[in-house]
Length: 277
Image (cartoon, rainbow, N blue to C red; front, side, top):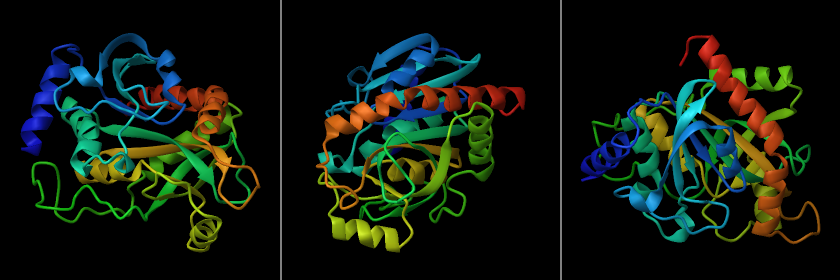
């Protein structure tokens, strides 16, 4: 059933865009305006694609964009589904699995995160080097789908070190401050309590959010090379006294767009120069 859904979705998309995309991009809260960097666009609303769910969270437009960045064929997901909305794990990772069926070999995942590390501030960009999954959810629970990957996929390099190093190098060359850190995924939709943030800091988390990890697990299962970039949109609970709001998250992410767009676009350009895509 899962495989037939992936096939139906990918065949529908291929009917709109004949070029095989080489790079996939997942755009999180407030980062969707990156699609302005994509040239020769073909735009498909999620609701038009078989088995894609319509997005409901503000800042997640629910649009698939096919096009080019530095002449490299790319496919971007402008918005994602979240477990806290009540979606099944298969539905949440279905878009990423569909991108793999379209032919991508590497995936850039992005999100808006709360900063736990006291050296992280709103507006900072962070290359994700690893994650801690405290959401209680895993998209691979259930019978293994051998066509997608092994029963027990290795997660030691879920975030490809070579791809992350290239992101860091590109950021330095373009004078964009890109930090590195460990992302913790929680279920949500409530923001964390101050006590929870103290616990997360104690176990090694630098930033926290409610997404990304299911997609990364599915991508690792598929054998895709993955790089993650998070935008710190707020201090996590207990660090400052202000209340947290999704509207503020979007605003800060949008302000960080110049640096974010630069490192993502130029990293794709470098991958082309290196013959990786």
